Structures are given as structure tokens and as C-alpha cells.
Length: 297
Ligand code: NAD
Image (cartoon, rainbow, N blue to C red):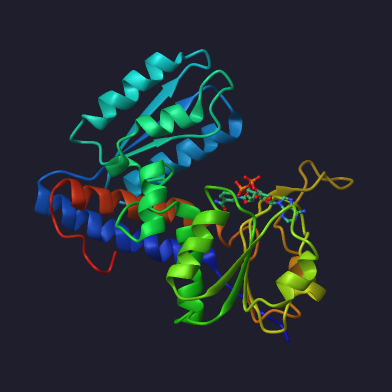
């Protein structure tokens, strides 16, 4: 069997286009554009790139982008004051504080200060709680993007066996919750799981969110499984390469011979994250204006 590639890049491009068209409608209805504020502290090069691309994508989706770039030595009180100002700004529907923050800042304290109704990353404990009890809130962008790819591919997930490898608050746990809510039978595997290959072998759906290059092997997979690879790992550069290749947590080539569908890295889950962030921001904007969120969002 050769698996079909789940093209997250194309799916994300379509989602961004749809959100952009709906954001233009929102602006007509509300008399203002939806707005996303992104806060970056320090000069981490990867974070600079992410923040730059989030800003561009926001503008391209007919929304306002507010960027706040603060120096590395910004104090907690100063950052909390900015968050408070954004919480009270009616032009701002979503607030995203780019992680990781410099070591002297307490990430949990900063995230807790964001209004849960503007927490479009879905990292606030209120939103984690809403997800776990089935209330409307914001779901972290990466697992929600994975879920969109899965339901697009498989339709109804009822009764399917799903194994999520990884139990982080931003990917593994919310991913498992979304799968349970979709009536899958879910196992969360992690660094202490015994005989991981045997656990993975049960799965109709495998979501790998570990951060270990090509850890999941073809022989671990049940033939015909659908594989979502969240991992982004850079290999050391081979001879003659300036930068090492990007690979996922799944050995893509060999896994493609056993799975029925699989996301590549890059071009799978990665592009979904920003697209879902834009979607969450537009949802926030509808809610903040007291308007009904369109079903198609
Ligand atoms: P994390 O480090 O917070 O969590 C990793 C998890 O993997 C932990 O729960 C740990 O128990 C588990 N784990 C570690 N070693 C293991 C092993 N040998 N066997 C089984 N489980 C093991 O990571 P995270 O933030 O959840 O991210 C996971 C990966 O996903 C990373 O590669 C990250 O770069 C990537 N990621 C991608 C996106 C995106 O595509 N936009 C977003 C977030 C994270």
C-alpha cells in the first residue's frame, strides 16, 4: 500500500481564503475589522519569523494586525500592563503572546492574565476547562488543525481507535480531548508508556506529537492507519548541506508503505496552525460583537 499524502498546505490555504472572505463580511456587518494582537518579547530568531508570518497572514485575511515587539529585559509588570491594555481594547479580538518567553518571565502568569475570550491560542486554563467539559471556548490551534485534517479525510470518527503520542498541554492533551468528543476510543501514550509499538499497533488513527525525529516506524503501524505527524525536528546537516532536513516524528517514507494516509513534514500539520489561529480570531470577533458565529467557520 502507498499512503495518500494529506496535503495540509493546500487545506490551510483553502481555510485561510475562506476565513478571509468571512472576515470581509464580518467587517461589513460590524463596521470594523477583526483584530489580532501578537506580543513578542526578546529577539529569538524563530519567534521573530513566526510573528512576522502571523502578521502578514492576518492582514491577508482582511483582519487588523497589532504587533508589539518588546525588548528582552521587559519586566513582568510591564508585560502584564500591555496584556491588560489589549484586554480592554475593543479593536483587539485575539491576543497571542509568542512563546517561549525569556526565562525571567512566568509564562503561566502571563497567559492567565489574557482575557479567556481573547485567548485565541486556547492556552488559558479557562479554555482548557471549557474544552474538557464541552463548552464553547478556544481550542489550541495545532490540535484543532489536526482534527480538521482527520475529519476531512475520515468523516465520522465514531468507534475508531486513536493513539495520541505526547501529553503536552498545547498538543497531546487537547488532541485527545477532541478525539474523545468525536467518539473515538483514545489512548494517550507518553515517555513512560510501556511497549509503545504495541500500543500504536492498535490505532486506526495515530497522532504523533513528541519531538523525536522519525521515532514512529512503519512496523509499529496497523496497516491502513491514518497518521498525523505533528513533530517538527531538524536533523543535523548532512555533508554539503547548510541546514539539516526537517523531519517529523514518523519515519515518513517507510510509514507511507503501511498507512492509508499520512501528513508530510513539512507541508502537513505545520501550515494548519496559522490558518486555525486566523479562524479562532474571527470566531472571537463575532463573539465579542455579540454576533452569531457562522456555522461554516
Ligand atoms: P512537548 O515536549 O511539550 O511534549 C512532548 C511529549 O512527548 C511529552 O508529553 C512526552 O511525554 C512525550 N514523549 C517524549 N519522549 C517520548 C518517547 N520516547 N515516547 C513516547 N512519548 C514521548 O512537545 P509539544 O509542544 O507537544 O510538541 C511536540 C512536537 O510537535 C515538537 O516536535 C514540536 O516542535 C511540534 N509542534 C508542532 C506544531 C506545529 O506544527 N505547528 C505546534 C506545536 C508543536
